[in-house]
Amino acid sequence: MNDIFHLGGSVFHSRLILGTGKFNSVSVLQKAIQTSQTQMVTVALRRVNLNNPKDNLLLAIDRSKITLLPNTSGAQNAEEAIRLARLAKASGISDWIKLEVTPDPKYLLPDGEETLKAAKTLVKEGFKVMPYIQADPILAKKLEESGVVSVMPLGSLIGSNQGLKTLEMLKIIIAESQIPVIVDAGIGSPSQAAFAMELGAAAVLINTAIATAEDPVLMANAFRQSVEAGRNAYLAGIPMTQDIASPSSSLEWITKTAHGEPVEP
Amino acid sequence: MKRFSEIFNSQEVFFETKKSSSESEFFKILHQQPLSFLNFLYLLRQENALRIKLIAVHAQQLTVQRFGKTIQFFIPLYLSNECQSLCVYCGFSNHRKIKRTTLNDVQIEKNFEALKREGFDHVLLLTGEDRLSSGVAYLVDAIRRAKKHFSFVGIEVFPMSVEDYARMVQAGADNVVIYQETYHAETYSKMHLAGEKKDFQGRLDAPERALEAGFRKVGLGALLGLHTDWRFEVVALAKHLDYLRRKFWRSEFTLSFPRINPESILSKVPHPVSDQELIWILSSLRLYFPEVGFVLSTRENPELRDRLIELCLTQISAGSKTNPGGYTGEDSSEQFSIRDERSFSEMIQVVSKKGYDPILKDWAPEFSGISIS
Image (cartoon, rainbow over all chains, first blue to last red; front, side, top):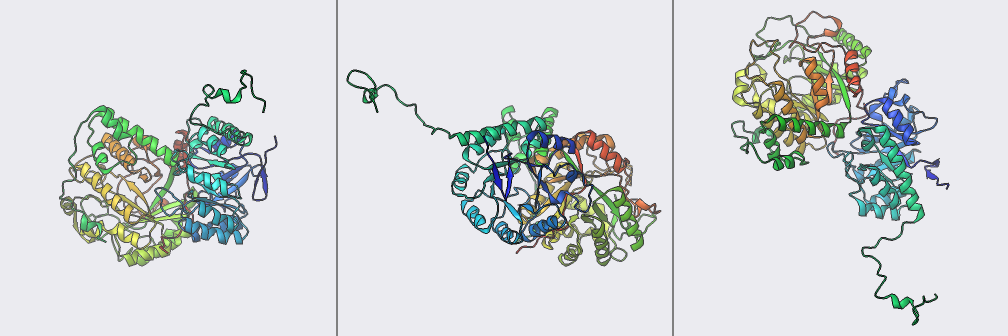
C-alpha cells in the first residue's frame, strides 16, 4: 500500500514526528530517531546555538534524511515567535516553523490570538507554518485560511501523558480540516497514538512519552508500530461500534421464509 | 492589588495539620496533582523515613516527566564585594576587614571571555549592596557587556525600585535572583543590623517590583539555618511563590535552597538543616511546584550534589568562585567557601555519567521582557 503523507509541498512516509527535548543524551536521541523511522523532528530554537556549526543537537540530526522542524518554544507573544522564526530562516536552518506561543510557563497552553497573528505574518514571509493550538475548531479554520500547512491541536496538556482529553473537539477539527491535522501534545502511550490515527489524524507528534520512557529507543519503535497500525486501521475503514450486541434470535423470522429458509435479497 | 508584604504576616501561625494519617490517605495525597496547599503542608509533617522516601521518589518522577533527565548549567560571576550592609552571616558584610574590590570594564570583559571559553552560556552577575561602587549605572553597563557574550544573563544584587529594575530589563537582563534570607521578620532584624538590607518589607516586595518592571524570570529562596523552624521558611517561600505566580502568570520562577555554609563566616549555624531535611524540603516543594526550576550552588558538598541532581534539581553551577574576578585570578575575598570544587568540564562528565543530558543553552536572545500588549 502506498500511503503518502503530503505536507507543505513535501512527501513523507512516516506519520510520526519526534520532539527532541528531555532526552538524557544525544546518542539516545539519535537511536530513537533511527528506530522511530521518523522523517521529521522538531528542535527548540532556544536550545540550539545557530552560530555554532558544531552545535551537538543540530549535528545529531541527519538532515539529508530528516526534515528539521524548528520550533519557537518559549515565545510568549507573536513578536518573539516571529523573531525566532526569522532567525532560523536567516541562518539557513529551515523555512519550516512549528509555531508555539505559550504565555504561561506552567501549563504551556497556546495563545490562539497571538498564534494567529504570528501565523499570518510568517505565511506571508514564505514560511511553512505548523501552529500548535488548543483543540479549537474555529481557530483551526482561521489558521487554515491564513495559509498554514497544518494545524497541530493538543490532545491534552503538553508532557502530561493524559491522552486525547480534547477528543470531541479533535473529531470536529479532523472532520472539517482541509489541511493535515497533527495531534501534538499529551499523547502518553502507543495505544493513544494509534487512537489518534484511527480518528483520522494525519500524523502525531511525540516527545515526552518517548524521551522519558525507561527505554526510549524501544518506546520509539512501539510508537512507530502503533502509528502505522492506527493509520492502517483508519484506511481500512473501522466498522461502526455498537453499544449492544446484534440480536440474532427473536426477529430472525424477518429474514426467513415460512419454511425457515433464508430470504433472498 | 495589594503587595505581598501587605498580606504576609510572619507572626501568623501557618499550619495546623494532622501529623500522621492512614496509609491510604497518605498515598492519595502523595499522588494528588495539582497538590493543594493544605496537602503540601501535610507532606511537610510526615516525620517517617519511609514516607519521606516515597515523597522523594514521586518528586523524582515528576521532575523527569517535566524536564526529562537534563541539567542546565550556569556560572555566577561576582562583580564586587563592596557592601554597605551589615549582615552577621555574610562574608561581604561591611564590618569585616576583607580585601574589597569592584571589577572595572577591562576586568569584567576578561572574566566574561574566560567563562565563555570554558563553554558557559548562562551567567549570573552578583554584587554586594553598595550603590556607590556597583550601583544601577554600573550594572546596566555590565549587563550590556554580558549580553554580547551570553544567551542568558541574570543578576543577584541589591533590591531596586521598579524604575531601576526596568533599566536592567532594557539593558538585557533576563533574570533576577533575590533571596529573602529569612521570612521571619524578627529573625531577619537580628541578622541584618545596618544598611539597606535592614529593610525586611522592601526586600520582600523586590521580586514583585522586578516582575512589574518586565522581568520574565525570577529566582526566590530562603537561607536555611537562620530561623529556628525550617518549615516556617519553606511554607513562607511557597506562599510567596504562589502569590507571585498567580499575579504574574506569564513569568517563570526558580527556587533555591541555600544552607548557611558553616565553614565560612559563622562559627556555628544557628539552626542547622540536615541533609535529610533538605531532601524532604526539595521533594515536597517539587510535588507542590512541578513546573518550577530548582537551583543548587556549589556551597553543598560533591556527594550530596550528585544525589540531589537525580532527586529533582534542574539547574546547577559548577567551577564557581565567590570572589570578584575569581576566574582571572583577582586577589579578593570570597562571600562563602565553595564545597564542590570540581571544574565545569568535570561536572559535565559527572552529569553525563549519571545518565543526564548537560544543557548549556536554554534561552533565546529573542525573548524580551514581558510586554503586556
